[in-house]
Length: 290
Ligand code: DAH
Image 1 (tube, rainbow, N blue to C red):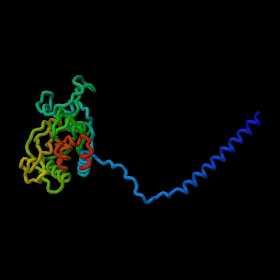
Image 2 (cartoon, protein in one colour):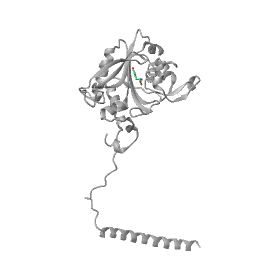
Image 3 (tube, rainbow, N blue to C red):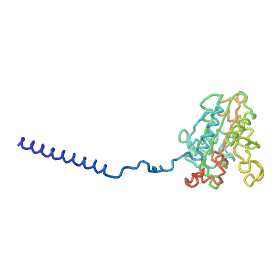
Image 4 (cartoon, protein in one colour):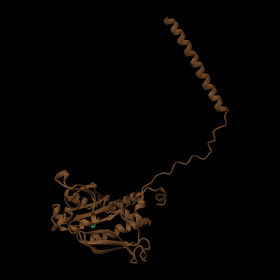
């Protein structure tokens, strides 16, 4: 029986092998007979390559500018303790300045991890987190997403800010102005000037709103800048002594400046876009023009 099976197997294998060889030969001959492959035909275009979103490009540029000035990047969470977002920044629960930063509340009671928690309304709480972790001197910048209860052509419920903080001995308003001027020049280009207007933010004293030469009319005066030649871009000031004390620093010994600005707004101004929402709709017809 075994001998018979072996013989049958050998015969089948032999026939299969011969047929395989014959098919391969026929295939090769058919290929050689066929018209030759024309390697000179133009190739097929790859699909459009992706690139950085205009907001990401602005964010990267800002971080690079600040890194060159000696600032390191610090990060903080988007779901933030009420304490860091407001209280430590000199905005206690009943402070009217909270009204302008209404947001999404995640947890409203308790202590420790369940303490009142919000979607952060600005990147300023990273100031507190960075200072708590270490002693001066300190130079940090912190880009990221922030949230508010806003929705119109120039406000989105989610937007981006970058925070800048410098704490050292003898930091003055002059240091702030010089840093701002260089920051604006590096981002927008030569010829862009800054203007400081006194303003109020609870975590700085004195505080200022900072304007930059209008990017639409280059300072001549137009509809966007209401004829003033300047548009508002950021908030700034010298760190409030109470904030320094909140993180265990001695305001008699050290001082600091801080500023914070909307990255989307800077990107809009730089690229002449008039509606913030275009940035977040993901419409390729818009993005391809950026
Ligand atoms: N956090 C403020 C806001 O979102 C902006 C701001 C103002 C940041 C003054 C600062 C500052 O660091 O010094 O409205």
